[in-house]
Image (cartoon, rainbow, N blue to C red):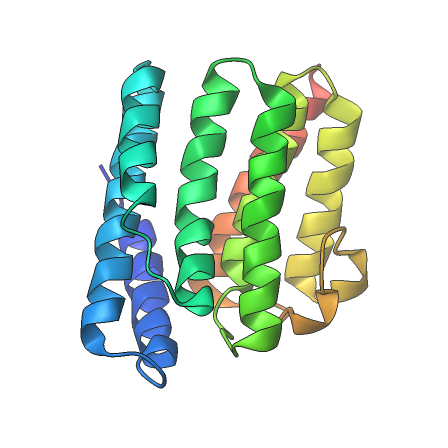
Length: 196
C-alpha cells in the first residue's frame, strides 16, 4: 500500500509529465503512456510476488503497445526497463538487471536533455539507487555504499558526482518530499552495506 508521501510524489511526477507531454502530443498519447506505466508496475508487483514468468509475459505483451514516437518510446522505457530489471534481479540475473536500469537511466538522460523533461531528476536518482541495491545483492557492498554516497551528494546539489549519463541535465539540489524520501532510502542502503 502506498503511503501519503509516495502518493504525493507520484501525483507531482504525473502532473509534471503531463505538462511536458501535452506540449507535443495529444492527451490520448499521455493516457496510453500512463496506462502502460501502470501495467509495468503490475508486472513489477508480480515479480515481487515470485511470479517472474508472469511478469515477463505481461512485459512482453506490453512492448507491442508502446507508441511509435521516439520521445514516447523513451518515456515507456523509464517504466518498463525497471520492471524488467526487477524480474531479472529476483531471478539472480544481476548483470542483466543492471543493464536494464542503465537503459532506463539513459532514456531519462535523453528525455531531460533532448525533450525538456525537467522533472526527471528524482526518478534518475531513484533508479540509480536500484543499481546500488543490485550491487549489494550481488555481493559488492563497497560499490553499493560508494554509489549511495555519490547519490546522496547529487541530491544535495553536487551534480559532478553523478556517475551516469548527462549530469548537466540534473536539477539539483532536490528539496521537499523527493529529497526526504531519497535521503531516507539512501541512508538505509548505506547502513545495510556497512553491515556486510
